[in-house]
Amino acid sequence: MKKIFIFILFSLLSVSVHGASLELAFQLGEKQHPRLDRLLPDVVRYMAFNKDSTKLIAKGMDGTLVEWDIQSRQKREIGNIQAKRLFVYTAGTNQLLIQKEDDVTILNLGDSNETQVTKGQYESGSLSADGTLVVLSKGDKEFGFWQIAKKSLKSVKTFQTTFPVRNGLKLSNDGKYVAAAEGIYRNGEGHRTIIEIWDANTEKQPMRVFNTGEILGVWNVIFSDSGKMLAVDTQRNAKSGIRVWGVKTGAQLLNKSGFEAYWTRALAFAPNNKSNPTEYLASGDEKGNLRIWKIPGGESIIWENYPTGIQALAFSPNGEYLAIALWDATTQILRWKRDEQ
Image 1 (cartoon, rainbow, N blue to C red):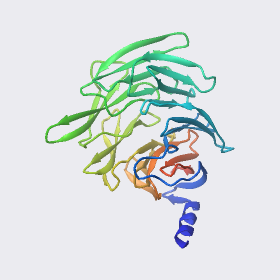
Image 2: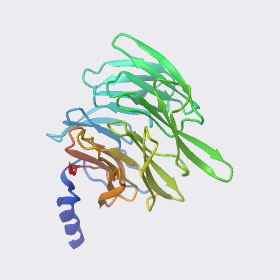
Image 3: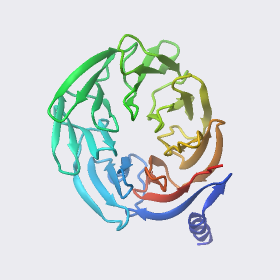
Image 4: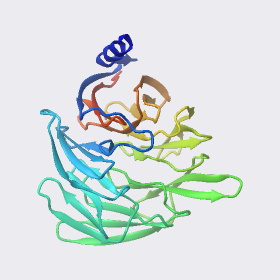
């Protein structure tokens, strides 16, 4: 009983280091006992806030798609998406990029209208913040680039990659850059992951290539809101890590490895402040470690531990909240305050 009281007390207190802080605001969902063999159906696999930060769109492990109202803390079920990987939400237009049977479509959550992008089974994809650009990959050595307008839809170009795009595909919010996480296998070395950065205006060759030097794949490939930074998680010798690079400069801004957790399953950049170049990156792993990293510098300014694994993270666009999806099927909503100095 004493240990439970201490944990509850710790959860209610805010964590503040170097001016940045996190404080528990409320919880979404009912707590369940995590399973050892697989994640519960109600565990959130992906989630994102809408543009005005009043809703949280979440997809469960069983494919159930729900929308939480942040003020009332009530949820409504939107539908069920069976595809495990291809699920992308853009807050700018309140749209989802989803795989429905043999069609890839864009679903507008406001009016439920759908726009078909193309046919076929795709593993990875991304959508620009304004909903006009789409990139898709089937897991082979290329990805397609589509442009969408109100009354027209056309395939713009195809990019030929060095290796199969097995580990993720991400389009920067402004649509200028594409990050393709590619997997390779070499005898005696095992799996390796490289990240190619492409200028969306040219398909001749990547503008930059990042070799992680780590085995297996990655769970996350994300751009910062400004598009100036790219972050991925890494895995080596059964321990996870994080890398962050400057997109234009190629400089490595964060390199952390050797975490006790096998995977760092969740990464999320905090909304950037145009008057302050400092970026903040949140990471969550299978051991329940939540860290906030200050970039550049690579300093871990906040470190909390939850009693179960972290599956997904999402900052609200207004910079007020950080949502944390746990393996006990709850989503913890924390108030976030960045250090503006």
